[in-house]
Image 1 (cartoon, rainbow, N blue to C red):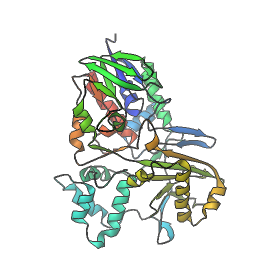
Image 2: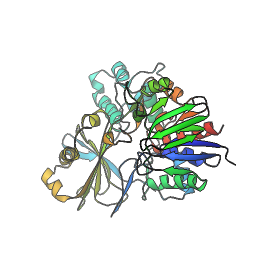
Image 3: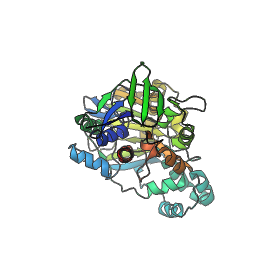
Length: 418
């Protein structure tokens, strides 16, 4: 007999994972503002297979993700191919790390008082002889982690970068297959999932929550778990996306100490492959869209362009036509092909600007120098009634990933269950 009820705001990986863990013990209802499940996971079916608007790779042998893939079961395949870099006008196999990378990690390891990556590099790598290493570190932090180096934590980078195992995988049926599996597990235990339900106000006291949606529906429960983007919850100093009565000002303040990175993806299908057949990634020194990748081991002629961090934020207000033009200029430079030739050979193009997405307002999170305290605050429930979860509150070695969201959902479920 389920005596207590739980509302979950958000049907992304964290919310669904929590529901999977808790629906056997609580009457769980998930309210999702979008018209689909998944949050920043968004797999789109195309004639030649699935393209990923959001999360795409499984970065390493991640325990929760891998367990779910095996349990479902859902096929996953190891990525293949070589990395290439355009440097001094020539596209060659990329040797990856600049000399000194491992030594830099050792310097990061012994940092006792956390500082920003910018300060760390100024302290240890100001000399011109480190210019190439410094350039690569900044590009990696901005491109892979979506981080602003003037704000991002050097200790968090050490924790993440030192734990990388080099393996990565794809899910041919799309990450959505994993989302659907977790959702089905929750539904099997009588969880209700309602789409197109935007919660705008929450009234609460201990063990008693009332949520009001923009379409004037009212939902009541004993507890509430909020898994939406922190950027959505607390957009600015004057007004929150979600109004809490009574207010939870300490939580709003804490949320501002966790970074949210910008990211723009471009997916282009061509009528034929014009790149090296063994290539997985292409890197360049282009300011915008410096990173591209293929679909290997699938040989379909699709290239995905990626731009993250402050440079993506610069173009966040651009329309899709302008973003496509910018992406093609990068691609033309990397491959020494005219933009007109590229345009003539495109079968379809998709732009995914996550800053313009109403339900995320950005990509994924990164730690700032004072994020540990902020996470501790947001991970502490209010009177055992209001709980938070999501990849932004993850404490492990794989931040900014689906694994991080799943782990946060699993952890908060243990807390709620008691």
